[in-house]
Image (cartoon, rainbow, N blue to C red; front, side):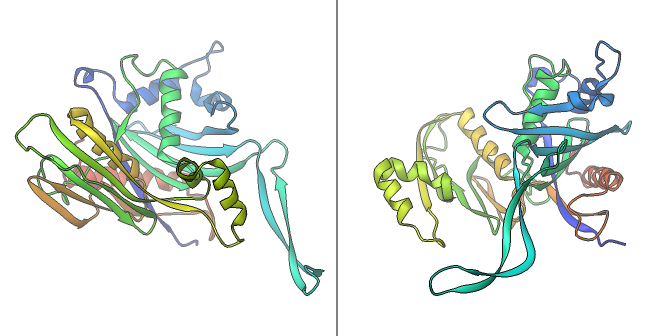
Length: 348
């Protein structure tokens, strides 16, 4: 029997405007969208080809909602990120001697690339999700992101079907763990995310007048490591295109470009700017090994994983597999929901 793999279960909640409380829940909207019938009276559950969202050109990626089931108490699905035109690198393990330079003859393995067999595509990411009410739990593997997930639900519920009210946008909010954030720390003045999986990002508004409803702030985003091609636009802005190209050509085989960027945003602090800090927390909440420290004017959370999520064991078909057992994931995500409700972290 294969040993279980441990993965992070992420939590999100559908963000609603105050006036939209009477709208159907996220779970109900998913169920309605998937139950919508075409002209042949077949619901979307039974039309796999119509559950495919293709990114606009020039991207050749697409997201497929593959296995998806109504569990009566929840809606559970498997989301796949596929690459239409892609190559997979392979190494041929038959060694042979080759002349690599005038001084070197070495024994090496051949490297080559192959396209996916006809009628198939390479799977670049896999995401399992569970919707209960407005609660969303998900586990993501490989290159798929929560942004891909949100893109898909926006298409499924708004563009692809009539499941989403026209007055609503699909926005998911990460939540702070109330057992870590003991009480309300007040207006967040500093949010720091750090960990092995990501360069450090600091967001530190400096409040000049605590009593004013609108105050001057300086928000500093520092020490964000931008590598490889992501660094090029920053370097070009500093040195110009020609100097950047010369720098790129001078790099050795073991060198790469990286920049450390410090950006200051100045202006009037409003409700929108406060909300942006929580938005940043949501964007970085997917990072597996990151830790979050929150400083507020009424308290501080230190050395705690403040974003609501949990590590859980999942069954895999066989040792070394990149897939999870579909039924087991459904059971485990429902278990996480029950735990969070019982512990008072979320409301049923």
